[in-house]
Image (cartoon, rainbow, N blue to C red):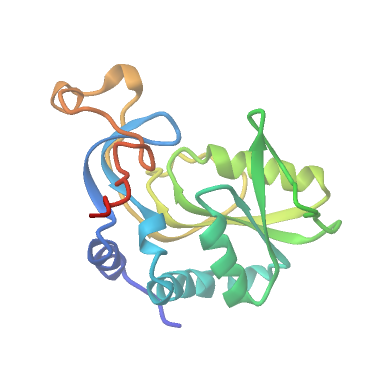
Length: 201
């Protein structure tokens, strides 16, 4: 797999209808006029294979033993990344606001781990997932994502390996510009972006 330039990555998102414009409330709680819907990009296994394959190339020097993804956003990316690296994949889930391992998942002591995300904005999920991995005795060697939109402010204590760095504006809830505030805000994945089943007739 060869390197994939930014324009090629964005072309994949556009082709998947996954580069959205409007008023979005991100997982971090920040607001943005642009949302990159990685779940939609990963709907097509061939597109996911291409994108994650280019990311996997960048991670080979880290000699990863295990891929751990925070649910839900990182699960599909983490699975495909592990497949391409030839390593196992597990995911962490939030229970009462804290990440935990369930479903019989475990982390071998000293395992070299990459934390896999779809998009990194503030880095909070990656940090919390990494803390969980360390609590189990794992060694987090890197975080990885398809899209880094943190503008260098993720504040991770590990290398962040991304397929593409995209500078998109985000705003604190109390600092949303008037032109954006005038548009109804939706949370991606909420009813504002979902379509119900078609009526039978």
